[in-house]
Structure formats: structure tokens, C-alpha cells
Amino acid sequence: MLRTLRTALSRILIALFLVFSFSGLKAAPNLDNGKKVFEQNCTSCHKLGGVLVGPDLSGVKKRWPDQKKLHDFVKNPAAYIDKDPYIKGLQAKYNAVMAVAPLKDDQIDDVLAYADAGGTAAAAAPAAATGAPAQVYAPVPQDNSWLRYMFYGIVILLIVSFYYTNKLIRNLTKNSKDNEDNKPEEPFTKSGLQKINAVLAPLFLIVWFGLILYESSIHSKFLLPESASDVGVEIDRLFNITAMVTGMVFVIVQIVLFIYTFRFRHKDGQKAYFYSHNNKIEFVWTIIPAVAMAALVLYGFKTWQKATSNPEDHPVLVECYAYQFAWEFRYPGPDGKLGKTDFRLIDMATNPFGIDFKDPASKDDFITKELHMPVNRDVKLVLRSRDVTHGAYLPHFRAQMYAQPGMENRIRFKPIITTAQMREKLHKPTFEYEMACNQLCGSAHFNMRRVVVVESDQEFDAWQKTFKPFYATYSENNKITALK
Figure 1 (cartoon, rainbow, N blue to C red):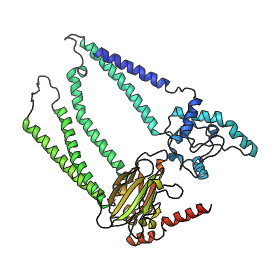
Figure 2: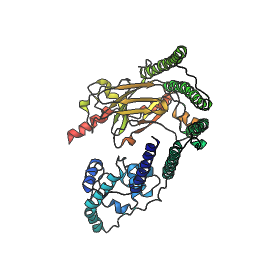
Figure 3: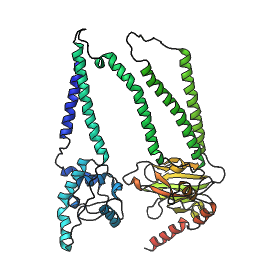
């Protein structure tokens, strides 16, 4: 068996060597595949030989000689907007941010080759006619990430580990053939290896817990601030209780596990005591977790019921309408009622919500691009989606609910801290509450962010008065269309 294991390790080493030796080799770009990938992922914003939403991609490899930086930009455009002047200039020129393209390196190479082959002539003609020099990209310094060096270190460590493991197995194989007069060295005997593992166990426990504490200390600054809603306070309390109970059990079990590994390690002449089972112990450690889990589940159900129930005290009603790729909000007018909607009435130009204006309650509704809420009043959010499933996520209020096509979902909470108060608490004068979509709803998913404002009743009422009913705009648009 040892010989088989040694052979397997040798083959793994050879395989690793071959993988890392040939990992740098690349196949020639495939123009047909490049055309296919371009048409599937790029044509909504780019074309060859002209400008659509974004710049012309013809000759992009010549304008951007740093191919690695170009690959990284395609995979994560937002990471380079602020630190790269060329990309920042493109964003300002075209007033757009490139969506993340889920492409592999070979697919990007194919698209670049296709763009160079198919767009060179088309791009050269306008430049020659105008005499304008082509804009050349001056790349920022190469990004030598520490992750790359960590990866190299891990690979080296794996190779060294395989080497010494192979050496250890060879020694064990050799020593197993020796007679009693030529005993193997202590570290390579069965009992010797068990002693080594037993001593390393508590050391590993100390290092492991130390790293957990270190990780917690350096990332604690990224935790959300205190909850800004009444339901959020309950959710935080439930989370803390759950973390405390499960955390205590985890720590105790791990300490007992590693200490027992050391305490009851192998000793020559000592025989383990066989203990099959104990009904009382089995009963106790089954009932206690069951009771604890039942209590947590019931507390969670109570909190969830509070978050999804209908408020009784005339809540502020807001419809959150999601579509690719933005949120818009509809507020009721003085009557406090939202008008009916019908998906068959949706018109992207004049009536994107599909509001039914035959319902009298709809004629005073108004639409905004910011979510405003008064402090210390119940708020009920009604969620709808025009196209795909979106996730309404308000992290500072600990609120999240899906917006799905063809149905209405709702969630309620009471804001308890205004935006101004939270800015004072955090000492951040530019702080804003936000609402985002936490479902991958498409290529421009990152655009689905809206500012949320919590303010006093007086400020909220004054803000509402700055809007006129959407019905007035709808009527004006229809009159203009009729005149045309």
C-alpha cells in the first residue's frame, strides 16, 4: 500500500510539473468564436467601424498595448475607473460605465482578434479623412498584486510538501522490510507519528483561534452600523443570540476535540477503554440542541412575521418598481392610496408602471428616483418587477425582499434614525442610506442602486410637495402624441 501511495504522489508531482510548464502556452485566437462572443456580449454597446453607446472597438489592441490590463478591465471595469486616466476619460466622453463581461481570457483574445481583423479598414478611413491622430492608450504601471506572489508561495509549499511526504513514505517502506535488530528511527514509527500529531494538535488550535481573532479584528470595520429600523433591531438581536449560542458550542467542541487528541495520544503499553454508549448522555445531548433550535426558530418566525405583516397605523405606502437596470418609486397622493396597475397598460415611453388611470386613486400618485421615508412611522414597501427577479436590499434597515414579475411582495419596518443622525453617529458627513438589488439580474446589475433618505415628518411633507402627479405628465404626453 505504501508503495502504491508513493507511486501516486510521484505521478501527482509529474502532473503538477507538466501543468505549470505548459500553462503559459496559448492557442491561436479563433476568429469565428470571436465573432460569436462579440455578437452575444458586446453588440448592445459596441460596434466595429463606428460608435454606438461605447467606443469603436476596431483596432482596440493597438490603442491598448497592455493586454493583461485590458483583460482585467473587461472582467472588472469598476476597479479601473478612478485610477486610470484613459478609462476615466472614456467614461466622461461616452457618459457610460462598461458592464462586467463574464468572459474567459481565451474568449477575450478571440474577440480582440476578431475586432482587429474585421474593423481595421473601417476604422482607418475616418482617421485618414480627418487627419486626426489615433488616441493611444498610455497604460498605468503593471498591477503586481500580492495575491500572485501568495499563489506562487502556495505552489512552492505544495511541491516541498509532496517531496518530504514522498521521502517519508520511502523511509517507511524501507524500514518495514528491516528486521527487529535494525529498528526504524523514532519519528518514522507508527507511535512516533502519532506523538507528533498529538503535540501539533493543541498548537494548531492556538494558531487557528489566533488567526480567527486576527481576521475578526481587521475586518470588523466593515460591519454594518447599528440598525436604523425597529425590525432591524430585532433581527440584530436574533443574529447575536444565534451567533453566541452556536459560537460557544463551536469553541467548546473544538477545544475538547484537540485537547483530547493530545491527552489520550498513543502510549506504549496503554490500552484504550471501550465504551459503547450511554442512553442518558444520548438523551441529554439530543434534547438540549432540540430545545435551543426550537427557541431560535420560534423567535425568528416572530421577527419575520413582524417584518411582513400589514401595519395597522396608516403606514407610509411606497411602491418599489424594479426593471433592468434601475429602481423607481411610486407614492400615493393626499388620498394615501396607490392606484391600480395592469401589465397590459405598460408603455415604456408614457406609462412604464402600467398605471390604470381609470382608478381615481391613481390620479394623484407621483413617481421618484429616490426613496424618502419619515422617521418613526411605519413604512410599507410594495415590490413589483417588470422583467426578471430583483432583490430589494436595504442593509442599514436589515430589510430584504424579492421583486418578482406578475406578483406583489411586501415588507414593512419603521425607520428610527434619520440620515442626519446616522451621519453624526458615524462621523461621516457624506453618508447615505442605500437600496440595492442583491440578485444577479443582468449585465448592468451594478447600476441598481438608489439613495434612501430618512427625514422628519416636516421635511418629508415638504419633499412630497415638490412633485406633481404622474397623471398630469401622462396626459401631456398623450396630447403631444395626438397632435403629432
